[in-house]
Length: 242
Image (cartoon, rainbow, N blue to C red; front, top):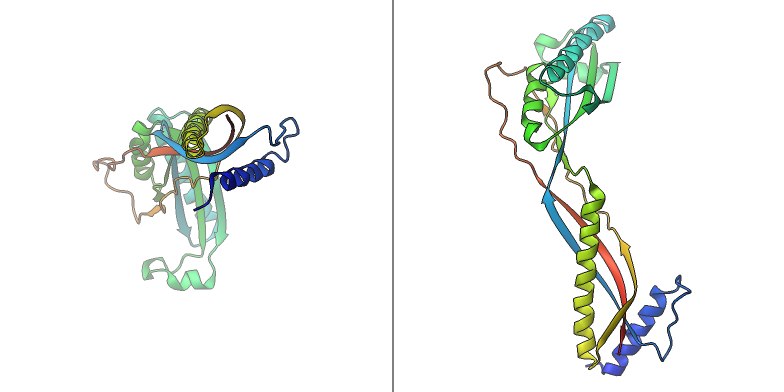
């Protein structure tokens, strides 16, 4: 088992490395410290839903495909705004008119074998979590046959990240107190702290639902529940020991 003296030497070496870019802090034999890194997270309910809606149409010629795509595009936009969604909350994501390649043509069912062009278009619609199901339902019934992904987010990301950092710092202090006790020392004041927000995987949208045809108008919206949003922080803290 390592002796307490050896433990202090190791901690002092880690401290020197951590403070290599902090010239205002001096580490020497008269200034004993403990360096701790801790990660913690905070979870809360999402207050913003980003709904991905889109469609594709196939056609025999370029102009006909574009005309049909334009009809569906405007029908979806009109349906969304008619239900109270502001245009400022609807952002274009993608739009493309292109010919089908030979492989795609061979994969078409017999009733669509004459098609040679595809038009696709998609948007993101920002709304409240409570309205996400209604927005998706409205778009699909208007012809958005490639829809379904929803990103659950926060309007104020920084507030949650600050909470995570504060929680991680408190976590680091608890660890430092236990380490100091193991060295028969008393934990002194905090002399340095840094926050590194780790790359937390964002919620991955589910694959868009490809629907052959819009459901009947009397169909109810899908049962959709908001997801939790989690943010984490890693804090490196240096405390004096007395």
